Length: 186
Image (cartoon, rainbow, N blue to C red):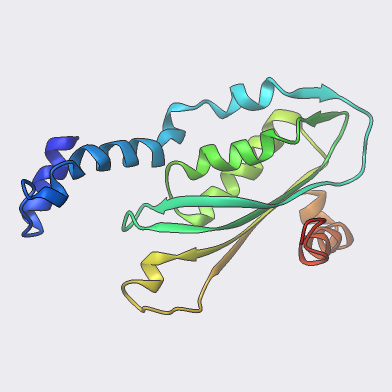
């Protein structure tokens, strides 16, 4: 990989042997291996290790989960917040696993639409809840730094499954919760 990044620098018209760039191919390799580490993680193992039987049947919401990913079209970052909810049907997952699965899917080359669906599908398939809802709000550097160069645009995607898709009241409750008071520490 380092040779590819070295060749990349040459193609840009740079001298990879100059002082500031000598270690750049090595740094780029480490950075891209980290930014794509989600390919080397099995989401099922993460989730299945934290499934518990519980008769709780109200909405569980984890909001404002940080998202950092790379757009698969330009390899430029997009970042923002992810909000996840589910309504259990006899099984719950450890709360810390929700940000973890967001991170795993984010650490792959992505489009925001697929990322949103992958998160909701993983939860739905693991615990078979009554419903799952995921909303991602993200800023895309491929829109801000190049192309349209629009500094104010951000993308919002959602994936609603089960009761969140079927029942407007449930969907609206989730949307209200993620838009309402922004948390205890704000």
